[in-house]
Length: 250
Image (tube, rainbow, N blue to C red; front, side, top):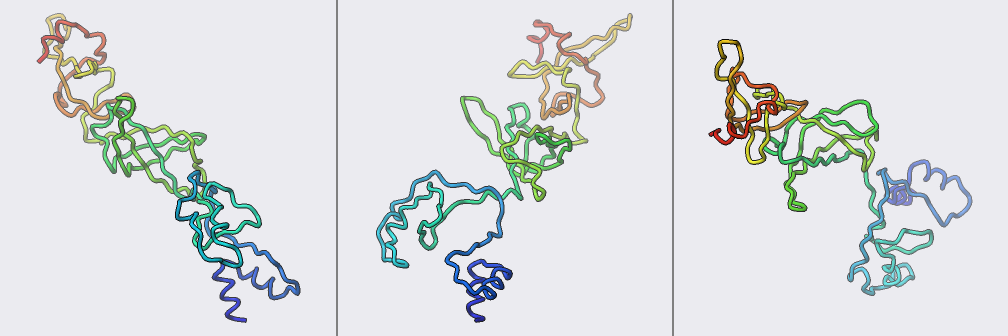
């Protein structure tokens, strides 16, 4: 009796089910096995491999070739025969989820593993503070962008599969940042107008300067090179636009 109980436990039966079998005076041909994993069941769309379709010895009175006719794309039905080791379906466990973000060219310079980020999941009021776990460059339709991947715990199942997520990158506090409106983007380079002098009437004199920028967030953009923290710049670069001054900029 002890060996029979142990065998039933190895098959996946709970203690309650085993006790019910002991007390029952009838024979049952079916049993319910509860999986320790929960989530969404996904049936593969791939057909059975050639090895799965090869005939083999008889198992349990049925030819294994007939059993292998159940391909991975078929949903398992009651009464169907299966083979030992055959994958019936895949369970997507949502206790941990991935967030995949598509990041534009402007934010790639400082996009690194471990970068701080704020996530705003669809349908939730609360934001999530996280760090980037993986950055993978992707090329598609001649437009380069990057995919950032974040792994999140989802024990309470609040995050839903295939839901949309917005994000904001957090610029390091020691970085030099200026208002996004102060930078004029020419495509190949970016220009800011730096104050060089003041007229006798108090009007500021500005000259254009090429700068190297990094990440942008919350209407601020990081300056990597070309500008000092104590220099004064124009707030709205668009108002300072002058084609001749841009051409003369070095």
